[in-house]
Image (tube, rainbow, N blue to C red; front, side):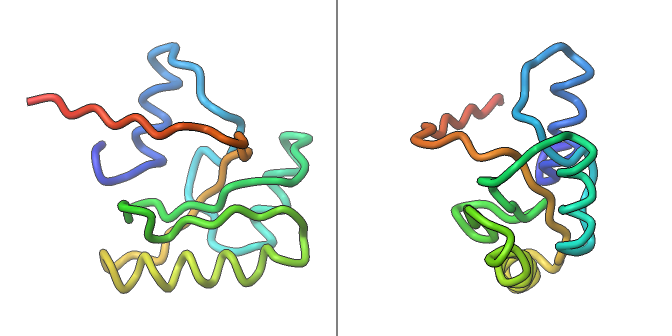
Length: 105
């Protein structure tokens, strides 16, 4: 669950936690992201995220379709270098959001 943002997202949804609209599973390409966006009637901007990376690696805000291909490639490349996985997904972009991290021991 931890270390896999799509699994964590699915867990949150299953337990009634509200999440931003986005991919429920990794997206192998920019064209898959476009397809899922269409299914969700979601428009830009979005946030492309590495499934496994953290610390700001593999994270790109994308404001239009022209920037999507490069964002997916850069996120996948950074994630592969950091954690060995090129898997990415996306969520709608929430401008000026704040990051809160909770650790449970």
